[in-house]
Length: 532
Ligand SMILES: Nc1ncnc2c1ncn2[C@@H]1O[C@H](COP(=O)(O)OP(=O)(O)OP(=O)(O)O)[C@@H](O)[C@H]1O
Image (cartoon, rainbow, N blue to C red; front, side):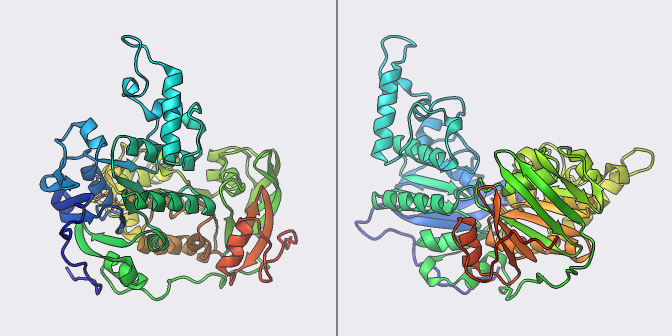
């Protein structure tokens, strides 16, 4: 394996007198059947350090997290926290006092209050008991309030966990981990569902905790965040450790090269804005679409060859608009027209039948049948094409899936592998494969590259581009600038209204400003002068 041209950190041994590392893992091996998910990897995170772990989809990051949190026993290797060997496998309480992971998916119990979640399974410790089985709830809430205050978390202990924002939920999970005594916290894509202000507040809180000696392992596909937050970065590639280096000494191109193993690509393969002919009949037309409480009457068209971006922060209405186009939500007014035909509102099968392909935001809830194979998932929308007279030929399913695996570069042991066993980013590729299988006239993709690594991101966006370049159309709903760059035109939504429209050539600053509801400088024009 070639080493990336970056300065490797010298020995990982702490200097004399320095505290032992928050975590030190060495020679860790983890296999799943024939798959080697971790091949003698190492990781050292010093006390008070923010350490990034990056790598392409399937590199082994989540598997390492499972080993570091005691969910998987490694097949070989050792893990130590603050110089002491990790607890025995299965001793959950002991693991909780060492480490916690804040996942993208909530680990709190939605119907319990914040206080109950904080002291779950240790009510006695928090509240004291009158007798067997009786818990003093006011005392529990008081202890919860103290604990939250100690870590500067402004959340009502009596609130139901399900009513918290993502940001509040993350803070509660961090406070919970610290209250168990953990001084090492893993954050797995923590910014995925936060807006810019939320990310800033999270980072400010993390920096403060770092000053108190708490160490963080930060897993993210947003490389800029790695540079904003972390001091050290470790790269894994194909189950192996590639390098560990100070962030300040590693340029982005070198980081990407370490992740991908080949020379950084200078330019993306696609180009926005080339193929659209304004005089062509639109493939997709939204006429006065409105949804009470989400967005107000919106008109737009998407022409053959065009990729339209619907940009907007959380609650701007852009996701609800995308979900209306694909039939998941029924608009309160207006209609959607595909190639001249009105699509029945609020019906996913009709949208699909009309030629709308859909890549959902939440692949776990809406995207995949987790117990089924890659082949079955990739072909779910085209079972009618896989055999005569309503039959599905396994050989044709496999063949079809294999071509998807090849064209989207899905990392899997084969079409028969269960999608549950794929890494997050590779699952997303299967969702996209499924949407493409029917050769849609319009592809509607909601945050299509969430959780997708930097190289796959480019190829996935290239696939969206190809849908348009072949004479069809695409809509990308996202607040990610990288997603929007592939678009020929971008409508920015704020509080349920289109507040600006940009042709290709926009600047990041203008689009970000529009998404934040700020005035846009020349280059982006007010979006109420649609060309229809
Ligand atoms: N339970 C499992 N059974 C079989 N294979 C698995 C299992 N969990 C992970 N793998 C495989 O191990 C490899 C590493 O996956 P892992 O989820 O650790 O990657 P990752 O770096 O976290 O990727 P991503 O960025 O996409 O989340 C992948 O090839 C994956 O398919």
